[in-house]
Length: 165
Image 1 (tube, rainbow, N blue to C red):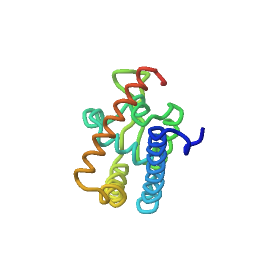
Image 2 (image 1 turned 120 degrees about the vertical axis):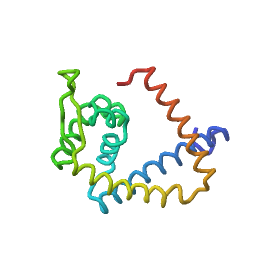
Image 3 (image 1 turned 60 degrees about the vertical axis):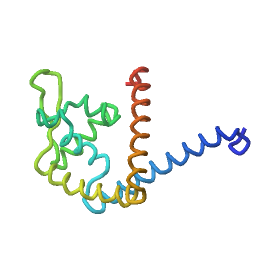
Image 4 (image 1 turned 135 degrees about the vertical axis):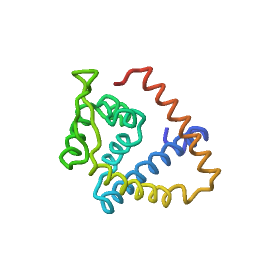
């Protein structure tokens, strides 16, 4: 059965999924290219630095455990290690030991990392406004935010219950 012969509800679901994935993929592509061109940082680097600046764990202890980063970013430990090594080579983060756990590894942001993050954050914010929020009314932004929050919670619950880790 192809999409045109599917029942209307199935066609609507398929259309929703296709639109969502196309918007998400394209938004990430454009945001990544914009950050690279204007700040010299990739979107994935920005996301790591954002956690190192904004997460409650980072604000409390000035570092974030690798496990927390891996879970938050949905990256495998090996992919995260590669990412952190790349950021450390750029001078934006440093690896630190975790006092409470000798096996634990943490990451903290450097002054250079904070500087590039602040530059990138304003570019990221402007890009998202130009591409998304600037094209929607305030109530549409709030409605879409509520929908995405509900979807995230549903997917997160599903993920945790099935232990995909």
